[in-house]
Image (cartoon, rainbow, N blue to C red; front, side):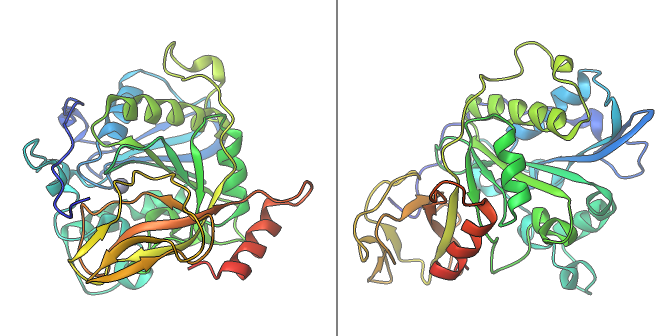
Length: 341
Ligand SMILES: [Zn+2]
């Protein structure tokens, strides 16, 4: 697989989001719907990465549907509009961000620090919505064609919430990135003593129409599971069939590129199970990259953002233990055994 692979075809029409620029919240492209009854404070986010707009189409459809929460508040935010506005179908991989990855700036040292960028500026504007929410659903998509993934972080409450949604999306439990904090891991979302829910959906390939169907399905299921809506409120045709997800995957390792001379040994798409420990999966600067244990499963392999320090693939194993073992104890055991990063 070449480091400079041709972009995938853009098969999803670019949405016109201009109607959401002005907002009564005072923050452009951020809208809130309030119910009379108290309830969950749900935050729905799209366009954290500017070229991942299937979630933005789903969010736009939700806002235009006239649906109102029955309880609590729903806030919908189109995050990195500056990057989205630069989207060019001839260079669709180029508008992921303007200055830096919006999903790596959520450490308080970055948010409160003196540094500035388009992404930090926007993150600081959105931060109050992120801080007040009890439930966060962050809608993303993937570089390479792959069935939907639900990225939960390492907390059992998020894995349980994701499982209860009834989608077939593969749950991926992971610890985030060494090069910066994701929005879904900010503050209480990543705290075991807190009770907030945060899920990140990778809906499918960025510009595959199936990615929109998955984003819309999960968005509606999330609102029902949080208690904002009743299942009967969901417009006809917006839900996909109920499905039992495969056993969750625990990300135990990340393969980080050391050089620009990085290539996989095969055209991996994610979900492949490798053989014995030591199986070569890639070469980096001429050196083989080997699996650390038998049966490693590849998660989101991609070289589209290749540069030294970038994650090229995650390695995982299934979180399936003998009957009766709780997800929490499995997570603890797995972290201990495999030294999850
Ligand atoms: Zn993304």
